[in-house]
Amino acid sequence: MPAKTLAKVGLIAVALALLLPWSYGYWLETRRFVPVDKPVSLEAGKIQTEQFQINLREDYNVQIDVDYSADDWRFVGGRILTGRCTG
Image (cartoon, rainbow, N blue to C red):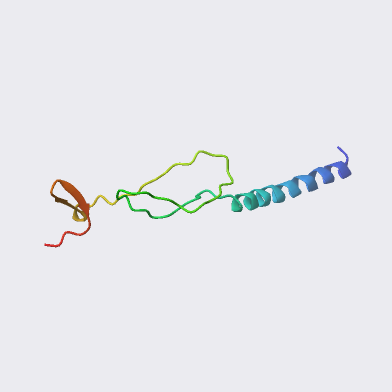
């Protein structure tokens, strides 16, 4: 292979090695992977979020994080109430 052709192939390879990760990183920064991250109350009633946009064609899941520590639960009249037990 001639030296000029080899030099061109090398320059193209170096350019791709620099541009591909940069362009992928830029694209990742423009995506919203978490459209809504907001605490909500699980008491009876209606929960409504503000409007939000997504820019990825993906399935989204709802995750509810609950603190199951024994100090935060109390039973009153057959119902579970959350909050600290006081005496």
